[in-house]
Image (cartoon, rainbow, N blue to C red; front, side, top):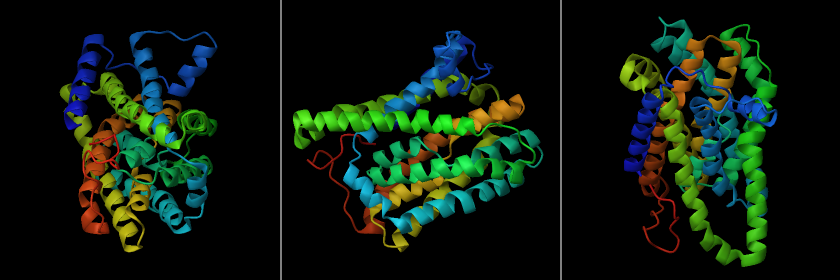
Length: 349
């Protein structure tokens, strides 16, 4: 998997340089889809790559949603302690921790500081499900967390933006649309797929067939990496100082948030699967919302800072998937499932 990730990043950088789209102003995916339906979208290379973000995220999230059972969701909604940890980490810790990191590491660059703070405000509503899935965590529980985060951030993002960034003008409708696109659509289609598949094939045969659906998660992840690095990845080569400015505080943020929530889960006697779901949902940031708000309400430099964010976040989060799996036996006393065993998941890192 690390080899494929590396190849995807290099391929994206190559496409970006060949197509000359490094300075392309990214259209928010929500606006892109709306303009397609209205017949006013220009399918140039840059715009097409922007839509690739939507396609890649869908391919990543949809297979995980086919694993969600209604009975599991009912159990997850009763996991009050786990939910309390996620809400506290996302809304009482994360925005202020990122604010402190931005002030410490980007004190001389106000616009990049603003971009980093904006990146830390909203908890992720999409890719954390995939990372939980890859780490063999509780996907149903992660979905419940995402649903709560989705509702709370629609209410609280304007509050945090005003508190931490001053007078910011943007529509909360952007947040609601993103929730529907990145969470609602894959959830509905995944639920339908499972209902129809189990009805026609039976539970056992459907689970065997999910091997092919799980492969889509990897395809979607690699496509997303190609697209993101195609749009801005060549900045690593041409202006590495931009990436370095963002990388140090972001890596600190992700590592501290993840391991704090992960170890807290172990201390509170959560299962490994629940602790992984808690940790990733406490760590991931909603870069789609950050980019949309930055483009709407701030300068191009602030928007650039938020676009650089996922270039750092995705590889770091994948390394945290690996770290969680490696530490499972030590922290939870549970042996890792041997590769190739019947219980092993088909998606491996």
